[in-house]
Amino acid sequence: MFYQNCVKILNVRRGKIAVGVIFLFLYVSLFHNVSKLKSLPWDHCEDISCHYSVEENALPSADGYDFSPSDKSIFFLETSCQRNLTSRELCAIESAARAHPDYQIKVLFTAPISEDILEQYVKFSLKQKFKNVRFARIHIDEYSKNTPVQEVVRSGALDRSQWGVEHTSDLLRYLTLYKFSGIYLDLDVVVAKRLDTLAANWAARESEWAVNSCAMSFSMDSVGRSIAKAAISELEKNFRYDLWSHNGPGVITRVLKMRCNTTDLKRMTSDICKGFEVYGPELFYPIKWQNGREYFEPGILENKDAYIYHVWNHVTKNRTPNKRSPYAHLARTFCPSTYTLYEDRFGL
Image (cartoon, rainbow, N blue to C red; front, side, top):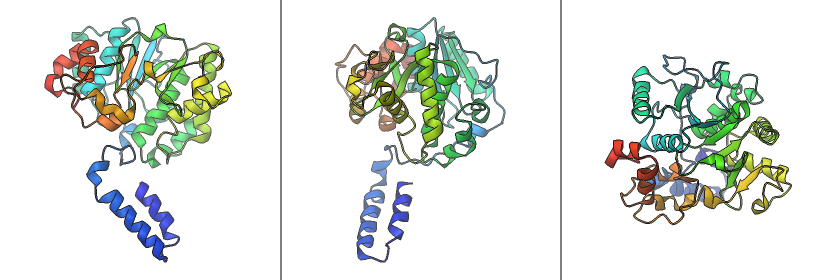
């Protein structure tokens, strides 16, 4: 934890008065108002033992040769041990399925899913005619076998992470696109437009400092293959279990800085980046994570041209959308079945 790391540093000079002052400051700052820190990304203590569980599981495996997604696939990853899907996650899946009826929507779980829970999702998808939605189980040891990140997984780096759920997702999104190609999306988005009208290979700037990894497309062409290999190689060499965004946005940002030969993200275009397109935040992240609450409060959605809307679960997970909020409007429009099913409980 952040506090423990600080204590290690302070112990070097704990005999000095200054250390005592700093220690006291940290204690008050970090622990006096713990409740205020719960929604922040560094306040985690995550159990990811389910990733290695061999208990009964009703999902088909994503590890072997039988799992062969088509070139037209959209991948979602559920890497927590909650063993179910929230209304927000179902909304993301439904919106992707509605916008892409000719695509395979692959939802990959790292935890075993029981027959009862699977039956709920099957009924939901079939009832709403989402026959392009499929679920599968990743056994992470097997899934990473004979890939460049095999040793990262075997080394236990994910288990040592303060953010095991997030770092597992970071690694698996790049590994999945490396293995199969396709489109990856986070489970806290709403898909508003078809994504195949974009370039074959793309990501989007979140800010002037980072290209985000919440939505990416790596095709099977030479551009997509080169980006996928560069990303997985970056993870193999530089995976960090002690840094929040290093293995997610950090990977694609570093890869593109090298490929595009620039540190100015606003200059990154298909021409500069040798066929890889970097879109502006207005098309994918029209509301910054710092302002994520705006999705949940009464108001009008100003940007109606985005392809996806990212509602930033890591800072909004405890918020319920007002019925007159942008998120509620998006849900009624693009995942109406989920919104109707959950009604007042949607977004919890």
